[in-house]
Each structure stands twice: as C-alpha cells, then as structure tokens.
Length: 119
Length: 107
Image (tube, rainbow over all chains, first blue to last red; front, side):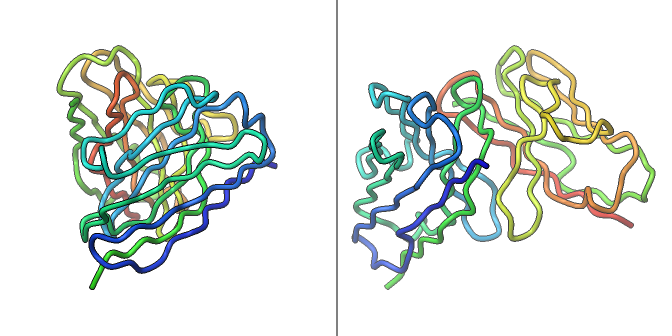
C-alpha cells in the first residue's frame, strides 16, 4: 500500500520559515521523482517544486523561487520542503506528490498539511 | 508559462447525463495532459494521463481525448459519486500548470 504522509505545517508569521516533510512508503522511492503541490483555501492547484529521483535536478515555480528549497533523503524515504521568507499568499494546503511514469504526471498524493502565514 | 483554461467553471447535470469538460492550452502540449478529480476535503486523484489513458481502477465511464491545444474529459453517464471538481494539468514543460477547475454537481 503506497503512503505519503506530510508533516510540519502550522501557523507562521510573515517573513518566517517552516520546513515540511513527507514520509513515503510502499513504492520504490529511490526511483521516483517527487513534488510539492499547494492549494490555497477555496482555490485551485499550483505546482510548487520538483526533485528528481536522485536529487540531481530541482525545479521551482516562479512564485517560490529563491525562497523555497527541496531536498530528499533516499536512505530514509523522505522529501522536505524548506520554506523561507513566507508571505500571506503562501497560505495553503501543501501536498506531497509522487511522479508517475513521466515527470509532471502526479500519480499519488498525500493528504496534505496546512500552512498558514499570518501575523 | 503555459496557461490552461477549462470550461465551464461549473456545471449541474442529472444522473445518467453525458458530461463534457473542455481544457485548452495556450500552446501545443502534444498529449502531455492529465485529468484529476478532487472531492471536498480530499486530495486530488489522477483519473487520466497522456490525454486518454485511463488510470487503473477508474470507471470506464470516464474518458479523455484531444491533442495539441484542445482536450476533453467526458463522463458518459454521470453518477452521484462523480460530484467533484475536475482539473486538467499539462506535463509538457515546467512550470507544470493546472486549469482553474470545473465543479460538477448533481441536479
């Protein structure tokens, strides 16, 4: 059974930092690209970041470039999203998402963790 | 960036109706087009990849078609459990982008 479990969400002040983590199980993590996708309250989906199976390639949405970083630990089957310089518009549910057969095909999603940026 | 535009934004249909959702890309994306279903309070789930490949376990009443810039998601006979928001998404190039969503309601 494939599982993606996010943790680390919470309330943070503007300009603050937060680190999200995703624990993966039930599939070959070392062979899978991983993503973070977010959804602001009542809004649509926005892809945030990608990391290749070996960590060699990383891509980011323009809206978070320079503020967010993505990393993975293939020995622990985890992928992290470090979020710095948080803004109110970063408030969203953040989903950990596994790539399918191709990069950008989001075939399994975690349940999400809520990040609220507010003073 | 590639802009994805869905229509309609919402629709209401009866059980058994045929429902079609359209997705247009701002430039050609071949068949790098996926469809997702999201129910309230839940994470999205992949329905269709590569424009027309039904994911294993997805009911056969769902189908997808199209290539280039215009795509459709069809539900051949709407069921009560299909009430959800549907999103298209291009995987042709980063940044991978989604349509704004189509909310399907049951009359």
